[in-house]
Image (cartoon, rainbow, N blue to C red):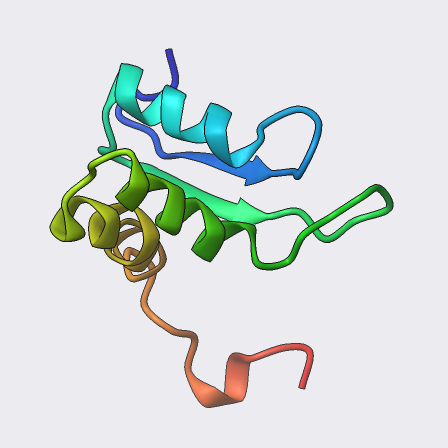
Length: 95
């Protein structure tokens, strides 16, 4: 529904619950990789900060091409983040 409306969607990867790397790849296989990107959970529960690169390794094991992996792991987040130009130096907050 979100992707059908032209929006972006992100998947937070957890090692054991919710969206595991294996589940994320299943979702990518089912819905495609357009406007989807991944991030690693680093919160109050069990987390693996390296889940994104570990997911890339699992994608390769499942036969994804290097270009398709690069699209999900690097190009999609870059495409999302570059939609908004950086704030001018005088307008930045938080340091």
